[in-house]
Length: 106
Image 1 (cartoon, rainbow, N blue to C red):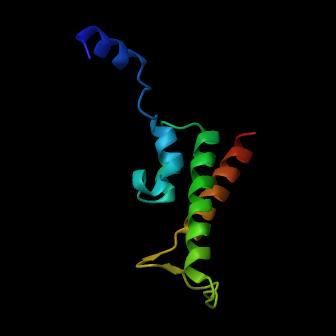
Image 2 (image 1 turned 180 degrees about the vertical axis):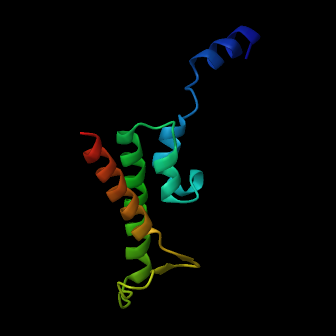
């Protein structure tokens, strides 16, 4: 490939995924806790909701796959997925907090 072809290919290459897109794919990789999504000033409320909803769906999939054929965990105890506790209740609490904050502003 000639230098001009390389330069042309570099200009047409897709830009790296935005932080929002990355967070939608794997929120837990970018945020240590759902409360950090709420505190992140780089996202609008609708974007925070999308990230938290993606995290919620991921946690539900993990729980479903880990409990297939097994008894469901007690509602008062955090579910354990592999070697870690599920963060589903934290994610759902963050979604409720976001909803309440939005309602109080309107």
